[in-house]
Length: 344
Ligand code: UD1
View 1 (tube, rainbow, N blue to C red):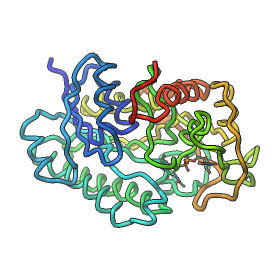
View 2 (view 1 turned 90 degrees about the horizontal axis):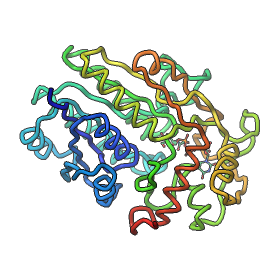
View 3 (view 1 turned 180 degrees about the vertical axis):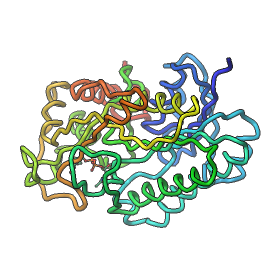
């Protein structure tokens, strides 16, 4: 049997690059596409090193219909995993039209091109952001949905678009995966998260303080309704997340029904839990100041991951310690991310 061929959009990004390796290890053929709007071509060199094969890659923008059409004409593609999107909440408030155009335009162009080429299996990167301010914890997939910023709105609208598409033609089969908070890196230290400019998210900020690039962490609020007053989130190792995509693709390619599933661990950790776990794992100290809350943040957000376990046979096995060890290995071996060769 020939290996199923999978298109990865946004392929050189943080979660996609780890998923790329996991798919290769699982025997899939992978074609990556990215426009490098928020990632580095150096990822491809690292993937070559880690996989022992030259990654099949094309530079293109998923919003470019002609480029997508040409890609599907020249390659056999059995399924797509759609990662390509803008993802910064603050930026989305400043540039809402860019977010709607890119995130919705890319999705629509991809789906139109797929349908034209009789390819109707899709894994979509959604987010726990679609739960807005959760009313109940842990969060189940049937919880109320809401968006609190343009980025979140694009994820919610994308989910709605995909449900309409699926309803319109039963040949579509889709996995809408709602990620909680991805952290960690490949255990080789060769690929990891490399945010441009000041990190918005907690873990890359912590690692940049630990490596000496930033002086102190700002902890956004210690008056939340949580045991230590700092915000609680469901941190999930990016390698577990990558395995979740493999499980979802296998499921879809068996001709199963569409699914919307949380990908989280089911455990909540506070900001200070993560700081302390990181200090222990790295042996570095992470000085911090408590500052006012960040607008839009919620007290706590963690998944009920039982649906993915039941239906996809997947669960996140890596704990907070290994998330911190692997994040630190990546950051310490690559103090400047992909901009410089890794330290040995
Ligand atoms: C954020 C986005 C979410 C998006 C996700 C993508 C917001 C409000 N939410 O999730 O929509 O899907 O990233 O990765 O931006 N924190 C600090 N100091 C920092 C950074 C964060 O104390 O410098 C705290 C936050 O208040 C929060 C926790 O750390 O309690 C996690 O923050 P973050 O990593 O930004 O993730 P989310 O806010 O959960």
